[in-house]
Amino acid sequence: MNLIENLKWRYATKAYNNIKVTEEKIDQILEAINLSASSCGLQSYRVFVVSNPEIQKKLGADSYNKQISSCSHLLVFAAFNDMTPTYIDNYMEMTEKQRGLDAGALSGFRNGLHSYFSSINAEQKALWAAKQAYIALGTALIAAAELKVDATPIEGFNASIIDEVLGLKEKGLHSAVILALGYRDSEKDYMVATKKVRLPIDEMITKVY
Image (cartoon, rainbow, N blue to C red; front, side):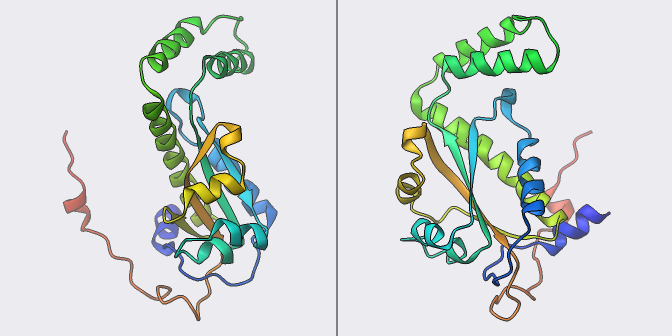
């Protein structure tokens, strides 16, 4: 199965070379992210694609992860700070149109969403949105592996710096997780020839039939 072989091939790349990933491959990874699973289908995050060395250097300030500034492209997964009634209404309207439904056909679902999100606080909404971004991160990692693009998921960054540089607060967003994309530097990456270590499958998985 090619998918399994590609997942065996991938690892959290520690050093990148100077080769740029083509826009075609980047766009395929972004499309995979857009198709990712999302709770209630609401896509409660946005993705910023950075491929500017100067901006990447700013984003990587105060971080030990040098991949931020050295990778070909950096994806910043920015989660919503809030799930507003207006966003829900607009999303439901878009869904009805795309599915060829009558206006208001999803009113029951929409009202349920209003009820749920009005019952939780701002911190819970932001955390919920960030979890959705992590689902998309997983999809991006698999898509990159399928395209033989190296990737490094990164939590070790200064969120306040990234939020400020990209103006996320003004957009109602906050940085949740980032993903470096590029190609491994086989001479400088100490992990390149290291065996992938995982638990035995029967220890990791319990089947309950």
